[in-house]
Length: 191
Image (tube, rainbow, N blue to C red):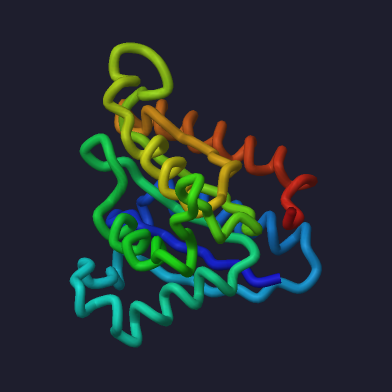
């Protein structure tokens, strides 16, 4: 089984989404037999923004190939300014490729990457799952839309929110997220 692990937070070792994505990867390692792991830190090594000539670069092809080769994808994502980091959006720009991960058919768009299992570790500074700020949440919704577009219709999200409300709330959010990851452990084998 090949696992692709992506982190996109710019916060390095203090990142909540990195802590969560690492916990998911560790749980997958424990619950599955052989695991081939590829890792990319999009915060430290961002892909170039998409340009027309950028479709033909060796880096763009390698990025797409790494995604296509993965059976399982673990994405660490922070929510910045109501959306995903530009580094993560840049990665999606390199893998949402007509004829490779989706195609246009007579009945509309058909996703071609649906055989993958995807886990998203999403950290949000505020409270966006309900209440007045819920309408401003565009990270989870954007990720679900892009993944669904390429045929991944049931990504599994683990969310820590309110991490910017102070150290006690941050710790509670991390503890809650890690306990949800631990509870998933029995069901972490690839689909």
